[in-house]
Image (cartoon, rainbow, N blue to C red; front, side):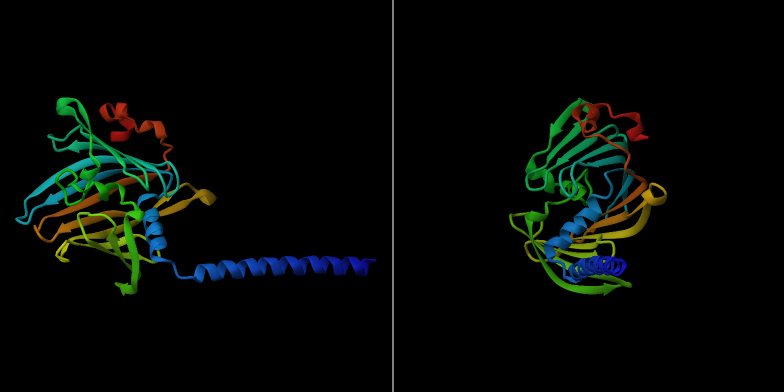
Length: 283
């Protein structure tokens, strides 16, 4: 009887090992499968725009002319994810300079359809809706567009994996993205870090197929959230630049005091808060 029980137990153990081993082999095989261009872009968007459940940061934006003249924008930015890789809400409050102080900008982002965007102009106490066509316009005079701030819908472009490339000790995917409808560019090339999946460089080409805008991620910091077993680390681009090669103008952006998972609520992103944002948001 004891011998029979031992055989039965050994049989169960062998079966468990077989099942676990098979599952591990399948998982390893799946991990080794090459990612498609669309999947790489989706993961890159997730890493760049969707870290954590929500986020708050202080932003300093330097607008630098070809002549060397500079203008500075200082703002606070908040973001909340409604669903992973899906709907989001953004809120931006301007501190400086004086002509834009207390101005606010809000986005309700819907992948798959046009986003809702509003701007509050305190000088005339007016909340203005930004038309969908304006998403490719300059964001407050910078070299970034409104669309750059909250991200472009993955499905808006056709994506192709051109090659893998190694630069400065990092391994990259190089992705070509072609807009399916007229846009401010006709082609975008993205260098996406294979480790973090963050886009560290993007090139934008115009209708003459000439390079006219270049984005670079100049500094990445690991932002820690939580402690012990609950600790998460989010690689975050905290310094970035957008250059317009046609005009010689560039915009340098620094993110400071980055915080994730603050417990922001969906209802916080409202027109009421555009006029009177909570003090904790804009400190």
